[in-house]
Length: 417
Image (cartoon, rainbow, N blue to C red; front, side, top):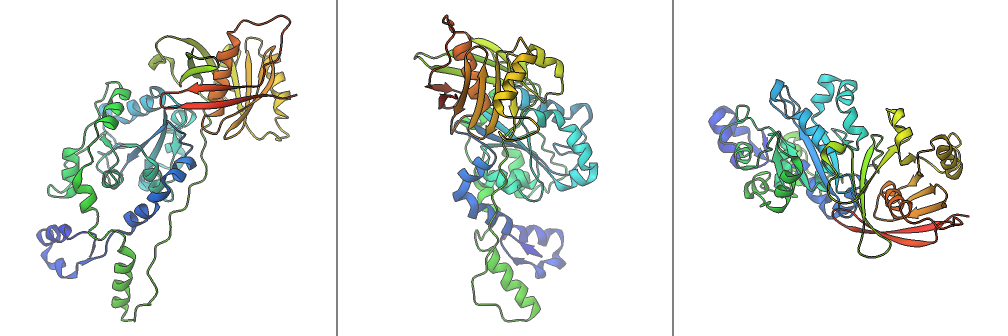
C-alpha cells in the first residue's frame, strides 16, 4: 500500500489492520509534477489564452452521482452554473475551463458530454483533456469551482481559492483530510448572482493550511522514493543516477472562438482615443451602466438570422485561407451582404485582426494583450459614433487605449493601403 502521507497510515490501521504492515511512504508524483511546473505558470496561462487582467475559472467534477456533474435531479447545480459562467461573466475579464473526470467521458460518451456543453463551448468554455491537461489548468487557474474530488483538493493545496458547488459528506471518510477540507471550504450559493460570489472568493481568500501539508509529506521526492521501492521489490540494485519525473508539457494554444452573439457596452474614456469596453454573451445578465451598446456576431453563429441585425461581424481564420479569401475581400463582401452592419473584422492571429469600417477604410489592429475581436469593438465605438467629416476620410494611424475590467491595453491602428 503506497501512501503519500503518514496520516493515511493511521486511517489504514483503523480500516484494515492486516494491511498496515504493507504500507510504505511514496510521496505524490502527480503533485510533484505540478509543483515542478509552477515556475512556468505564466506560460500555461498564455496557452489557455488568459490575457493580462483576465482570471481563469476552472470548473471541475469527479465521478459520482453526488458530484458536480452528477445526478441531483431538480437540485442539480450544473445547468445553472454553466449558464451563469458563460453568460454572467464578462468575457474580457474571465476565461472559463472545465475539467471532467475521465469516467464522465467514458460513462456518458464524448458525444453526449459535448452535446451537454455545446452552448458553453460556443460561448468560450475550454473543455480540458481529462488525462493530459488538467494539471496545467490547475497551475493556470485563479479560482476553482468544484466538488469533493481530488482536483479540488489539489487546487486547495496550491493555495488556489476553491468554491464548492456540491460537497457531500456521505462518500468521504469522516476523518479524512478531504472531508475536513469540504467542511471548511466556502459553498456556492445557487440562484444568487455568480459574479459577486467570485469577487468575494478572490478578494477574501485565505489559503487553507491542511491541504498543502497533508497532500504529501515528501514534496519533490516521489520519484526517488518510488524507484527505491520498485527496485527493492524486484531485488535489483537501484541505478545511481537521479530518479526523475517527466515534466508537464505546455498545452496547445487554445484561443477562444465565441460563435454566440456578444452584447458589447462601451463608453469613452477621459482622454482622446480611450475606450472602456465590456462584452458578455447574454444581454439578460448585462452589461449594465452608462455607455453605448452594439451587437457583435460571429459569421459562424448557429442563428444566422442574427447576422442581419449585427453592428459588427467577426471571422476567425488564416489570412491566406483560399476557402475564405483575403481578409479585405471577405470584409467587403460581408458589408455588402449585410447593409445594417458597420464593421467586419477578420481575426487572423492571437494579436491581430483586419477591419473594414464602412465608409472609413481598411485597417489592421494589433495588440499583444487584448483579444483582437475586443479591439474591433473598441474601434467601432471610437469612430462609428464620431462625427463623420465630409468628404469621408479614411481612419488615421493612431493608438487606442482599451480598458477592460482588469487592465488597460494599447491597440495600434494601422491603415492598410
